[in-house]
Structure formats: C-alpha cells, structure tokens
Image 1 (cartoon, rainbow, N blue to C red):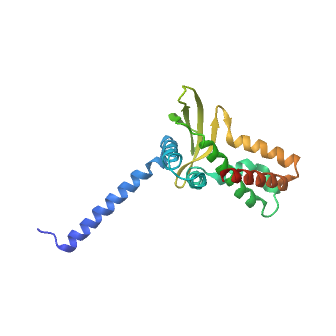
Image 2 (cartoon, helix red, strand yellow):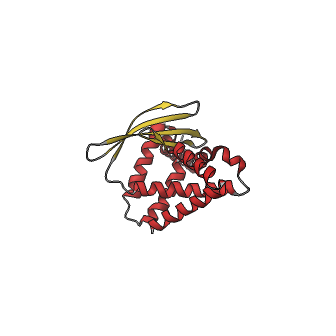
Image 3 (cartoon, one colour):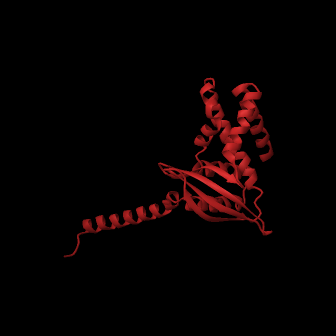
Length: 209
C-alpha cells in the first residue's frame, strides 16, 4: 500500500526528529562521563580559546562562558566562604559570589594564557561519594616534564561539573578557603575580604587590557 503524502510527511518528520534527538544525545554524552567532561573542557579551551585569533579580552570573555559551563562556581564559592556566610551582612554574600567568579575567571584565564603546547592526558576516574567522581590526569610538557592534576566532580541536573582542581596534591578550593578565612579574621571581617577581592579583580582586569 502506497503511503499518502500526509503519512510520508509525518514519517519524514519523525525520522528527522529522531535523528536530531540522537545527535543531541550524542553531543551531551560527555556531560554524563567524568573523563569525557574533563577531556571536553581541555579540547574546547584549546580549540575555541587558546587557538583562536582573538584579543586577550575576548579570550577572557570566552573563558567566563567555558568556566560557568564546566565548573559549579557557586558551589565552590559556598565551600570557600564556609561558616562566614552565616555572619555576612545583607548583600555581602551576593557581592562575594560576583567577585569570586571574577577572581576565578581572570586568574585561570591568565594561567591558561601561558599554554605552550602542553597535553592533558586523562588516566582514570574513581567514584567520590554518592554523586561525585575524581578524574586523574597528567599535564605533559614539551620538555618531557609532567605534573599531576586531579579534577573533583559532582553530578548536577545537567551532568557532571567541576568543584575542585587539585594540582600536585594542592586543592584550589581549600587554598582559597584558607586564604580567605585568614583575611576575614585579620582584616576587618567580610568587608575587609570584599575590599581585597575588589582590588585583586581591578588589578587582573587592568592586565587584560
């Protein structure tokens, strides 16, 4: 029996939709894989940012999008601020969140700007609690030197996101937490911390140009 034009149209539309959904699912598979997410982050950072013929300011803007996509920056900020969030004055926690994102973006975009052809080699991953994973990797330099980088991930609604980077055993999140706790205790509480963070962000922005 020959299908009618209407049946053919419905069938064609259904096949096109199925193909689109399959492609979309394949594109999102890396978000469900701890090692896939880390590899995708490195690939996208090198291809779309470091290798792009754009200004440093444009690269920083792209890094902001990249980091917000792959990192759970609000969660990292909450961990870093810890108990001091409970004593923050109205508006201080929100100001901290804004400044902390700027610190992360500007600091790490400058570090990635020092890229000179190093290679990220993902070795393995292991469960970390009920909804987390740690991905172990090495950064391999052109001179034969290497250093270990571990990526701590947590599963969110859209897939895994990075909540910490551990370079040669040193945790980024814990380092920020200890540093900021010292500033709060010695330099006028949250107001003192926010003032120092604002100065740091202003200095980093000036270097971007």
